[in-house]
Figure 1 (cartoon, rainbow, N blue to C red):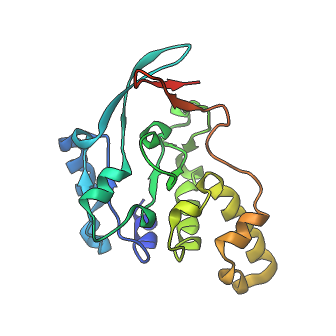
Figure 2: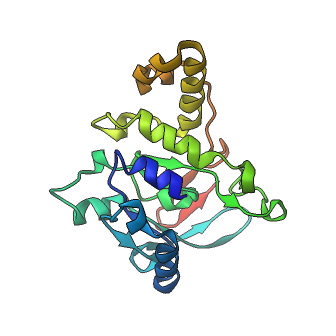
Length: 209
């Protein structure tokens, strides 16, 4: 995590929005030791600011918390617009009230025993995990795009793999490859399961199909 934050903080300001309680989030922030990385988050938000929503499917019903990026954009109006923000999360339900600049990453589990399928896709486990390293590369690739909403972030892994292939072929010249050229060469490697569909019913409840 620290390597990832150190890498992306060269190009981005970082904000933290967690579904943890205030006390748990404070403990996590302390453990991350952001000052040692030279990082001062532009915001730190816990679950008390998240939006509690209802959902139902053919199997179960319940509640979940969403993280609408429009809320952050309003709070930071004049400093950032929603076009300049990206939301990285391991829970697709957190995206349901947000726009298109959301990036789904696989959740991490320390122990393979706990690595059960999560929302239909594979978790990253222990030392074999490289999703944060790949995410760091992806954020480097797209950093010069003025409007992150125009990027199809669902295939971010495909873009990283395409960049890796170009690097093997072109060497250091691959650094000049734009995300648009890489996207045209990328295979579809979306993290999100194709069966995941969410829609709002007339009652306002989110239906998971």
